[in-house]
Length: 196
Image 1 (cartoon, rainbow, N blue to C red):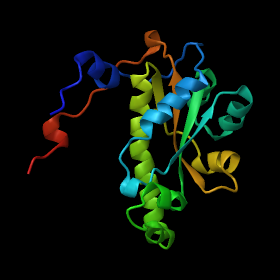
Image 2: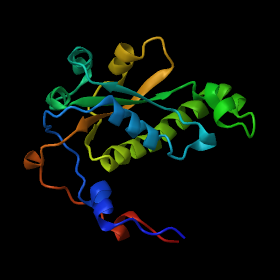
Image 3: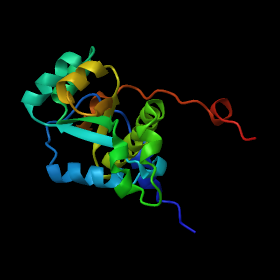
């Protein structure tokens, strides 16, 4: 039987972790970005489909390309963050299934059903995206995941001519805790859950 992780780890990953909007100017190495992916890739996915794809935007030039797709205050957040990750998914994830799921030939199931393929890619890349956030936190980074952008514009700018599509954005860095908003409440178990 596995043991519960220590309370400090639980705080870092969950109860004390916050979504940050303001960032310190410290940089993030490519080594840490690789470590984030190398943890996030272990998320469970249907038929081990692993559809998440990530573009880590670090350069000012590439961030400038992203800005027109952003809404409201997200513009300043992206400008200030050391890294903005586009969490995307590959619509043709099934091309990798012979390697990723050798137990059976699952490729035709998705290749011949666009609706199933799209739903599977979106859902499973979202699960991987959750692991991505926890991986960044586990490595000592703060995150600022966000919607508030035009997916079609992001796809046109960064994924034109590919089978990749954007899911959500996630700023990465060391957040300025002095500028955090008061923490929002969460629903109680009895409101959000049923045991049947």
